[in-house]
Image 1: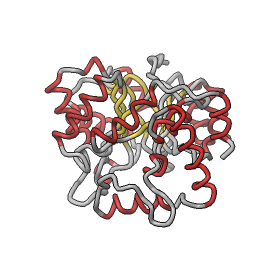
Image 2: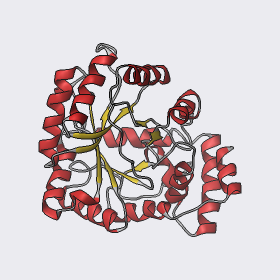
Image 3: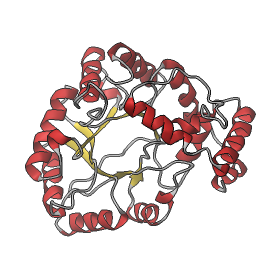
Image 4: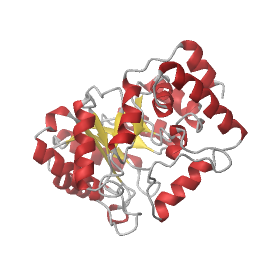
Length: 314
């Protein structure tokens, strides 16, 4: 079994916006600013953003690959990408995993992927089959570590058991939907991740934008030049869906803590997530440099035990 490398902590920059709501020049500026500020990890997927109007998938990886080639910063960053949910490369069949990896390497213009996720479980493929495929990629030097995104705890447990039984590379990381308002991860899966020595990189760390504080009750949303389009509008509606009694109370606590530290609300929400057991780094996206400036303070922000507990109780 090949040992997994050490995976980074801090803040992971979500690449879903690259080539979608952030054009190439803006994406380059965001990547430059993130890495210049000490950011080390960039998260993407082969499917980003196939579901958006006018796009077909692969756009995010392509933009990141061009940035890597133009800036020469491959050794400065950890690149995470995913396989399995794009219609063009759907599922975790071994041949598909191998072909998708080669496609991603070409788009990313690199010879290795630092962290390669199964984007979601594939009940139609025996787990041992796709674990063997991932193991082969690691042994070939094309992938450094593998992870599981959107897996149920029981399926993650069985994958780890099979990897150990057959001396295959085991999942080193998970990527669940987890943030201050979505807390299901804290149950069975977090206990399993802790017990097995994995690390967690939660997606939707800002709850589709709700935890930036820009969505407020009674039409009081803060105008931040929101993206338009069916998919972007659906995410905005999803964020507004958190504006129930609990959500409004949570925003009030976030506002108080943000004011005390003189940082944006988004930074507090991400700092809370980063402080949770098993979490290595939350994932957050930014479409503009102004939005990036709202999340970067999370890296150096340390919340007190009392502040962490106040937010935990919400």
